Amino acid sequence: MNVDGVSTGIVIDHIPAGKSMEIYRLLHLEKLTCSVAIVQNAQSRKRGKKDIIKIDENITLNLDVLGFIDPDITVNMIQDGQLTKKKHLELPETLTGVIRCKNPRCITTVEQEIVHAFKLTDREKRQYSCIYCDTAYTE
Image (cartoon, rainbow, N blue to C red; front, side, top):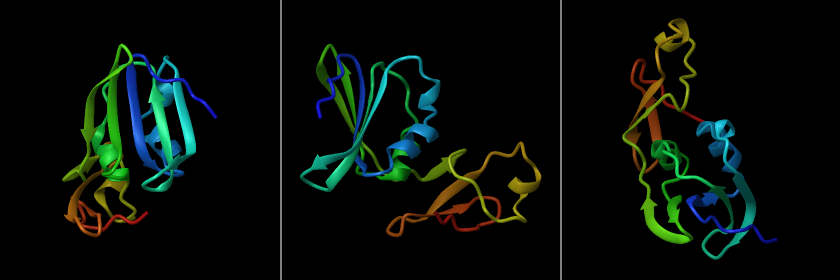
């Protein structure tokens, strides 16, 4: 399969296979008016299989979402067909409005206008806890 390159825009690369649609949803890419290409299960020397998202426009991305999904994801900025910047990600220290607390007694369940916020509590296990009730986030 051959998917054209991006002349000006963003290529999100090294996405774990099967995670591209989650990223699409969390970044609200459906709201864009430009072309967005999703390549799933592409061959990867490092991982075996990977997903790729190509966005045909330079937009502002929430890098915390991408770092949360997998800190090994890379974000490539393309201008006039040339790579101008490559961003390597890290696990974010805090996540706001990305994941939801599952504790039914958490204030975020009762007060709908409160934004769900989490702090990184264990970097090795990639574990986050709700800042309001300390409930650990589990997928």
